[in-house]
Image (cartoon, rainbow, N blue to C red; front, side, top):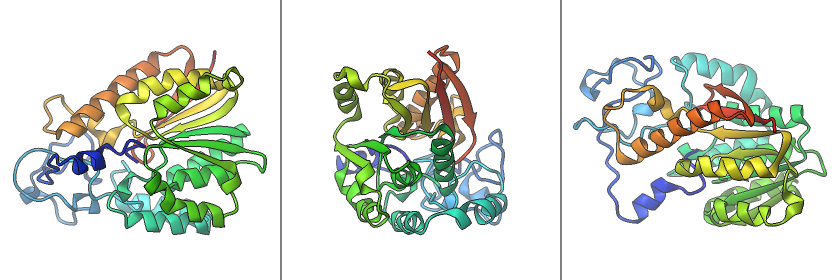
Length: 298
């Protein structure tokens, strides 16, 4: 997902143009290092992620356009990704999560939701770490939030923060029908402010076991500093979109739209900082749009 601040929708609502004229960025058939191909030269059998990108021009615009829960992956083979989904992911996806995922896929910004394999990873991490008190920064319709609530024990809880209550209301009925609404504490508004409010109460310092961040990318580094105080030593912080459709590995002069250029730069800066941060142990995975798992050391 792009994040709780929904920058794309804000840009659209503010009247800023969102042009879908583009050169294809990352087709699953091609490695990251492959040259960008104009639409007129694209190989046969182009993937869903080409959808919404009209021919003409040479600027990659909104690199995630055309993605949904069926193809949000950096794998070079859609057939291989479908195999993973069909074999190990979808057979174990709870019905309530599947229903919410499919509803969200129909949303105009549905590509912002977590992929099913990413949600499965979150559930596994929560169970492996025995997390009870958790944070989620960036909620959208609540697919990953539902995954979290289902994985938590009966006495578990998740503080979920997002600026967009309207999107959260789409998923709330699914959370309620799943019987886990009592675990969810949704807080509307900017995450930086809500996290500061939590830190103002000393009882919250080091009181959380787990945090998942899928919000506005330029603020990730600031969230990191706040979460290192809220999550206990030995706890886990997970960041989403840390490969940003593979743009982090592209040459600096690659033609990208302004939003993708800014977000990719913010993610690259974050990746460098996390790798050098002695306070955490880091593991970056090429799942979905890139996930970085941090274990707090000190």
